[in-house]
Image 1: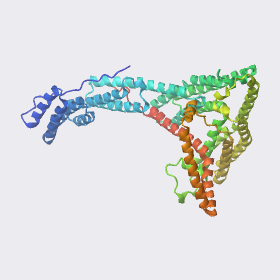
Image 2: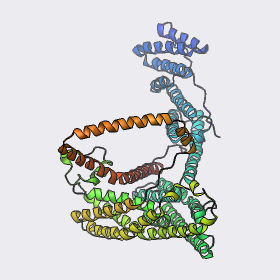
Image 3: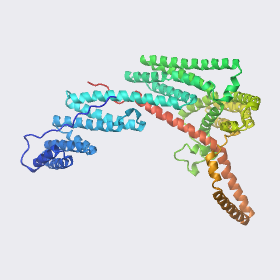
Image 4: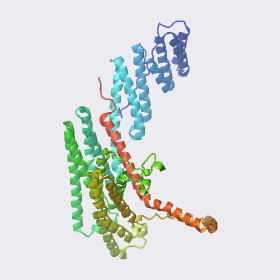
Length: 589
């Protein structure tokens, strides 16, 4: 591991100019205390001398400020030492100013080394930013030092060490983050990450112009090559996740006795892997164009690569995640076009707003700017394309459920009793409810697609009212499909909880008695109310319950979309920072 070599604190002795006046006596006292390692007392003497010199001789004040900073530095008061070094760095004496800037670089390097600890590779991302900020301060100080004294060898040496340290550890951090993402994401999530990063690179290339520096093109090419290096890991995930697991009896039973199924599986994996290779080839082509500084050609290859990765996502995404994503995105589109903000959709939209609309403004039309129309049209076209997959995927998964049901009937005679109790929660869902959910999707999904096609047509004409009607109807149909899907049952308490419940029957009986008493009290209160009050109370209860039941799952889906959008914005900012404004640690001498 590369370590920073921190030069010792430079101590400037005060020579023949000392006189018998009071400030010089304080300087002598401070020097004596400093030599005896009484740094706190020495800093006080130097501070008193500085105050006196500032009233009479500014040149001597800078020297005493430097000496005070050295004492504070040794005593561990780094922030105050920075201030005194900064004051000394303004001195007209180049020797004093050079040493002050050098020592400010030393302080920042020491702070960075303290934050990094013994194992810099393992520090969390927030700490990494603090480390790089301190090292950036150190670099600035060493460069100021070189501006004043170009032949300052220690400053040159420390700058080179900083450059090597930053390059080495940022590479390690980046590789650790990539490996963590590979390990913690499934195939669908990994594909979404690759597509989003590729589109971010495309957006960065679109911002380039004739005045863009060659370094920006070179850096974007480097990041593009890093993304290309993820293609082998994508192929590994395709192969691993699509093959049946040995411990999964459901997947094994469907293909164990079918050689044709095995051949189809191999062909499917090979096809998806070939698509991944094609996406990688487009990334390589984009890198070549970036090296030629041809942004237009690079953008075309980047878009083709993103489309190829998106095609893999379409092929492997299951029905339910696809439905949740398309419902969330369709809800976003409908909310942007909704003429009235008093319906259930407006409540969902309120979750996105930092400052919800005031009651008197809730019935105003939302303002869609001219620049928003193309984005809405593009988003609706994307949702339309993916929603066309809902019906075929529902049919495919419905067939799988039926096949598993037939296989389980033939195997039930040889299955030991109690095996189902250890199965997953999904196996406890009523198969008939699962089938019914898929059948509703097969029936309604084409209707949602038809509404989206009409919405695309009217968005192209910028016909807001008609577009809003069709987008909302498409959202409503997708919501109806979502509501028709069976929910996973809550997991049963484990044996320990059951035993604990058995050991506490008295507490449960007491709680039950309290509940009964409360119910009786409420019942008596209800009997005292008039029929009109009861009727009004019932209406209020219905108004409170209906929106909650109908929008919970939509809000959950929208929350996930917001999180993905926030992650994308953060990733875009980091990418642009890496491409257009890296830490200035390259050699400049």
